[in-house]
Amino acid sequence: MISRSAASNRWILSRALGLLIVCFVISLGGFGCGTGSLLSTRDEVRIGRQASANIDRQYRVETISADAERVKKVGERLLLHCDPRPGVPYSFKVLDMPEINAASLPGGPIYVYKGIIDLIGDDDDALACVIGHEIGHINGRHLAKQYTKQVQAGLVLTVLLQGRGTTVSELANAGLELLSFKYGRDDEYDADRRGVSYAYKAGYDPNGMVRAFQKLQSMEKKNGGDPEWLRNHPL
Image (cartoon, rainbow, N blue to C red; front, side, top):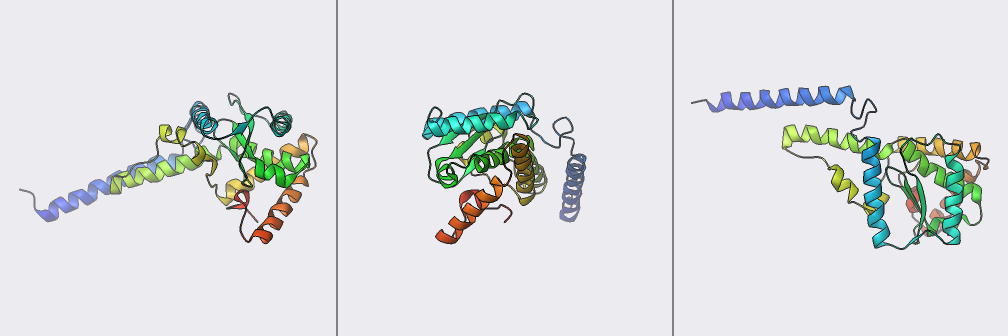
């Protein structure tokens, strides 16, 4: 019979060994063919396609309206100047919702809300910077990297608390939840940098980003709260 103290020590040692193994795996950062991500481009495309299909079924999405044509035209012009990722089928749609927001899904789908189109008005330069920002999230693989961090944290929880991370299928079925995903400040800075660069290279005025933020800040002061697109974003 094993004493309680010996059993306790063995449990602690096994957990410590497991944690060391997890920490070693995390330190490698060698998921996804050395990209630092557990998700391959194929995974991202699958997630984005499924989530986009769910959104298109549940909400009014414009694809042939004047706003939709404008967003698509600007988006496709940006793609010619942004080193798009091979194997990623980018798409640009308008989501008929009043929120001041724009969002991207992993693997290519980009949605621009009616609310931010109405706020920006006919300023194509500002629109290009907003869309470029969302392309920047996709090209920077920001959601895939955030997912990897969560799964890595889940590995630690598995050892210590028998927890689990979010599965790829759960991500794919998230739909609108992915549109409201909040990135960290570093990812937002990176998406801004990429978006302004894409807009400039495509012949748009990069100061459109400044004008977009000025309108967002004016709305913030008027309504007493952050517009959706400005939340968790560098001021």
